[in-house]
Image 1 (tube, rainbow, N blue to C red):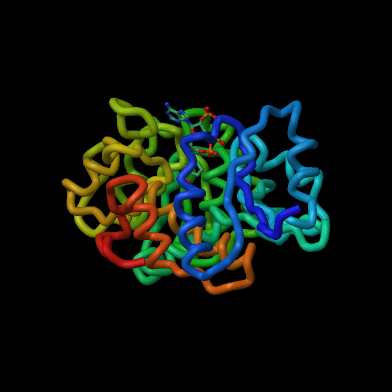
Image 2: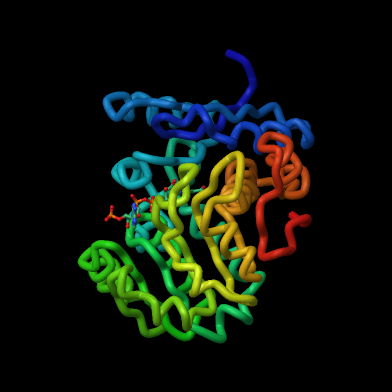
Length: 291
Ligand SMILES: NC(=O)c1ccc[n+]([C@@H]2O[C@H](COP(=O)([O-])OP(=O)(O)OC[C@H]3O[C@@H](n4cnc5c(N)ncnc54)[C@H](OP(=O)(O)O)[C@@H]3O)[C@@H](O)[C@H]2O)c1
């Protein structure tokens, strides 16, 4: 057996993943004999993949769709964040024990912390009520706005998420129908897109143009590899400050690197590697050059 240690992204249909392009140059730069690869498996092979990740030569890895919730059943230890989100996106293998974290929350919280003063001054609106919306709520727990509104096309989904989050959020929170969210959007200091709208070229924006204005913060978790989506383009044109899904991907990288290797992550190099792989710079509230 070789001495190389392995980290993986575990998911299904992940051949497009940018994770190897971000992590492998960082391992090489630090002289680590580590390799980041993909475990692209259907649900029927999940247990086999988890057994692979428990082997001593595996550091652990990132978890993506559709396994973010399924891996909780294999956990030996979970962070409070994972418990509140009911989802994990990072799994560390410590001597055969799986320790779960949620690095999506870490990424959102890191971006938000750079604009904490603006976030603290006004309401936050989250559009969408799925897994990413739960991660956004958990990140808002750490850097709270004055209040939170969750809008969804199925208001019952927004209501269920809000009722769950009320127990641990330190600020007032309410749910509403996306189609009736005009006022909440117009009053927001920060708007989060946690819907799948904007993944495909030609998707409409989930946020009406009239809600976008100078100084507004827009955190859009989705991205298109080639171009900005409609929400991001509209928001920039209106003078809003935007963090896009590419920045979200980047911000998960250093956290994962540090947790997997116990070394400080070479952030700038990881950012440059992402830019080299995609041909474009992630949006970071207008400060788009820095790691
Ligand atoms: N940049 C990254 O690294 C990253 C990481 C994670 C996720 N993402 C992206 O974020 C998106 C959301 O992920 P998730 O895990 O939260 O998914 P999810 O749990 O499936 O939730 C998706 C949410 O979007 C809503 N939605 C879908 N289509 C919509 C439409 N046409 N109009 C209004 N609402 C719509 C869904 O509503 P219903 O329940 O009514 O369907 C649901 O509330 C995904 O597209 C994913 O690609 C990006």
